[in-house]
Length: 224
Image 1: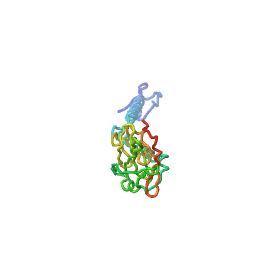
Image 2: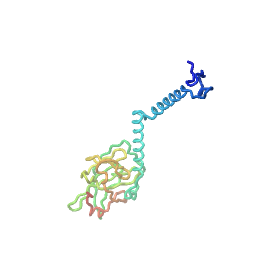
Image 3: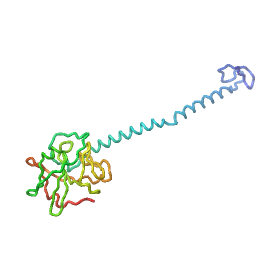
Image 4: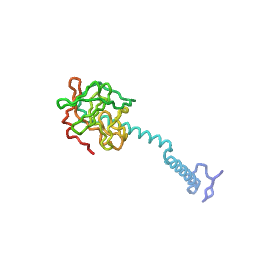
C-alpha cells in the first residue's frame, strides 16, 4: 500500500523516514517503532515472569540436599575432646545400613576400676552395663566409633530419662524420643534432646580390658 506525506502529499518510499520534499517525519515509522517497542516490552515482560513452579521445586530440593550434605559433613568433622583422647581399639568400622541394639553385658569393679572385657565390646559393637555405688546405679554404654576409637559414656538421654539406644547407620538414636547424635563424636543431629548426648566418661584399655576409673562417676548427676 502506497504511503503519502500528510503535509505536502508526495508519495513516499516504503522505507522512507522523512518526506524528501518537505522533511516531515513519516507517521507510519513512528507507529512501526511503537509497535516494535511494544513487542519488545511484551517479550521482556514475559521472560521476567519467573521460572515455572516445577523448576522452582527441583531447584529448592537440590538446595536442601546440598545443605544437608554440607551439614552432615560439618557434623562428621566436628570434634569431641573427650572422645578424641580415647584409645583406638580397632581399624575403621563402617556402620552403614546397620541397626544395632544394645547388648547387655556385665562389668566388675576391682581396685577402684570398673572393668569390662574389650572383646565383648568389639564383638557386639554396642554394649550396655551398670555400675552401682552404694544406693546409686549408673547405666553405662560402650561402643567402637567409626574411626576405631573406644567410646564409653553414661547411657542416659537425660531429658527423657531413657537408658536405651540403638545404632542406625552413622548415628546413635534414643529408643524413647528418637533424638539422634553422630556416632563418631556425639554431635546432635535431630530431636528435642540433642543438647544432652550420652555424657562421655574417660576410659583406658589395660591387658585386654576396658577400665573406667570409678571415682569419675562418684559425683555424677544428670545435667537436667
